Image (cartoon, rainbow, N blue to C red; front, side, top):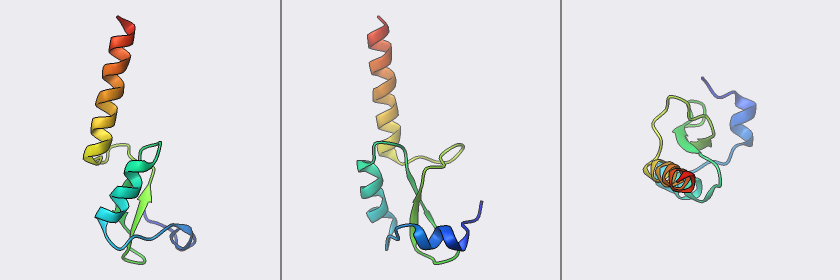
Length: 73
C-alpha cells in the first residue's frame, strides 16, 4: 500500500531506521518502520499483518504469551 501525500505530510519523519525503531520500542502498541516512497524518509506504521516485525516486538509478544500461559495454570 502506498502512502498518500497528505498522510506523508502528517507523519513524523526519521532520518534512519534505527531512530524510528527506538521510538517504536517505547510505544504501547506494535509499530514498524518503513521507507516512504514519496519523501524518502522513514515513517512508522501500525500495519503489521504479514510484515516482518522488529526483534523487540517479537520478544514482547513471546513474553505476553508466556504470561498468559502461566496465568492459565
